[in-house]
Image (tube, rainbow, N blue to C red; front, top):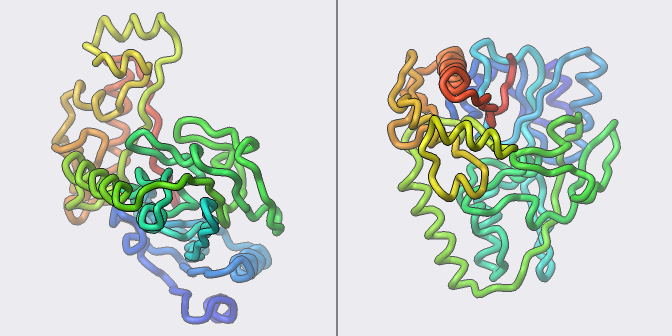
Length: 318
């Protein structure tokens, strides 16, 4: 299989490759094979070979929002490495493997407004589109026009309106579609002002988030309060800040703070002292350590507040 994969991607195939090298958590056992694809043709070639050999396939972008199993993955992990983009006026076409932060920097430097907030996103555009990533008041869907996806071995263009975007949610998460590229519509702006925005977002991220240890970023989605009765019920248990009350969205990090779980540690995985919604790898954490912390947080939130937190992190190999 290694030889057959190398006929498609050349030297960009590894056997028994530790997934810890490819995830920001720095956690994960070996993938039986890991290949890096740089074109749609290579991607199709690997998929066809896997299908013929009846070998499982998993897609990996930047690995920023992924928890890989300690056992690894018994199949082929395909790392999307299509990393080019084009700017035509205020329209930006970008391949799925481009880092979100790099695109934010490039568009800001080009005097285009609309993606500066994404400078703090650690992953790729493909993953950001799939999960409707967002921060600092922006979301991917805000400026997205359309995406190209691989579906049933064919490339399709899909307009934003068909993707059922929601908070950290899209139809893509519930399909087998593989994001290949995205098109964004931006606005003209002042490059010097946009550079200042980029720097400000990076400074705020550094101040609020633990960047000195492996993590998958925010572990849980913020909690949406859907009905007034639930808001009143929670208000009897919690002193909800005015902004969260008006938006009816409770920060997961704030909820974890209210549970007094900051600093809780299992094995080498720890809930960050700096940000409650971050679990960090202190050096040699196992995926099982993180899974146990996730279960602890969810159980406490359910038992004490009647809230079911949902993970934002994606699981690989479980």
